[in-house]
Length: 352
Ligand SMILES: C[S@@+](CC[C@H](N)C(=O)[O-])C[C@H]1O[C@@H](n2cnc3c(N)ncnc32)[C@H](O)[C@@H]1O
Image 1 (tube, protein in one colour):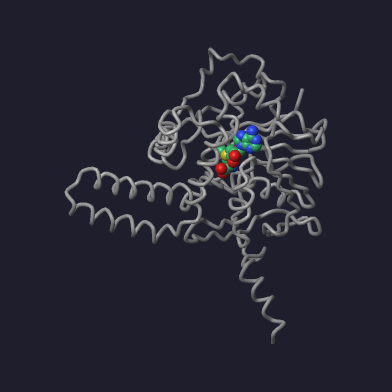
Image 2 (image 1 turned 30 degrees about the horizontal axis):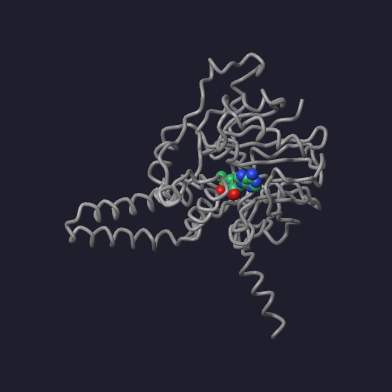
């Protein structure tokens, strides 16, 4: 009897298997998605391949990214109190805490709570209270739609589609600015036997964002044994988490894949060559650099205005895939694949 307990426990923690291929399920905080990405639905990486010859592209033609200027109240308050601009590391610490709290919310319950609070605020007849409560309703609805309904943040189908078909075996994967490490885990599911190194200088990312990432979240990948599909969970992966500034890393050229998700757009142009170089520095010859950045589309612009208090503590740009690709091309990479997933542009590149 007593021996049965751990088995039941582990089933509860790992509730999905290959038998459920095609399943999608809405949990209170996120979507589970075991649907294959090879269908005609939108939810896949779209290889736009709009650019045939990157050497012919010019900044005059593609224009420069759009800078998001709405900043969080928390950052403004910090700057008032300290009488100086917030430094980058502090701004990331603020961002990571604020952002992570939203992944944890029970959205249906939170939406009901926010709506009830709005109705109560009407009785106050105070415009500031009513407007704050209305803003809260809007933020909850928007997050629910973008992250939970649409799965636009994790976007497993888009990411699987983007990552598939790389010429690597048991790859060493380095994730720069890894936060919770989602994309490296998705890569590790697709390329079994991977060794993953996550790097972030915010300790909270290791202990909370990655540490508390649900063990029950299924990653659809491949099985080395059968060549078919296999469901993996966070504890299945070989992951080392390094808390340090990327500038301090001393790995050498030892990785098959170097990845960043939402990093490049946080550097003004003067710093972009350095940020791109971080990806080349640790790549083996023939290795792949993978970059994604948020797309410059009206939906994203609106998202960053409504969600400013949660999302905007740092310098941030929205760009097109052509702009992102040109930064990467100009700084010494050949573009192998380019296009977009739901909310992000994506480029896979190899050093020239
Ligand atoms: C926008 S986040 C990455 C997006 C992430 N995928 C997410 O879902 O939040 C960028 C991450 O890079 C980290 N970061 C920024 N500059 C860094 C540096 N110089 N060294 C190490 N980590 C850095 C930040 O702490 C932050 O967690």
